[in-house]
Image: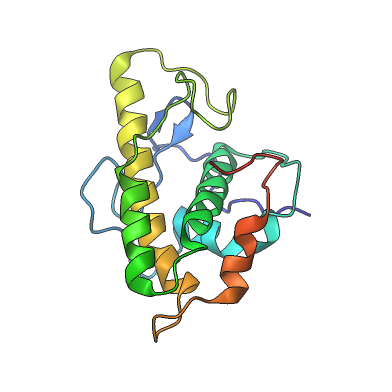
Length: 174
């Protein structure tokens, strides 16, 4: 059974292209509202559920937050792929920074990994809002992923990096 997000479709949550702009525990100032540091956010859920959800080929979507969870699961898979050859935390950090510098694709662009997951933007500002949110959430996920993919002494955690070889929903990580 796949793990779903605990964030249900709530009133008052802004959406861009059908993607909820959920609060994040982040120091990055962008479109995501700030979340309480003690609460669980979507990035925590994605990292916690990654090792279980990556085994599934199908994902029954129960809320719009599940769509974001799917996107983050694939992003974690891509990030682990980039970290796989890095032997130290410093090398891993460099690889993650380079991943963060890549252009974030939005649903109407050809490089978006899940066409049809989010509806197309109605106007350009909505598309840019989603791009900015996805960039913010990817940066936040990358930072937290480094803390689980590497041990405190800076060596790789093989119990995490072993999942770099897995395909999520039959999508090959670029």
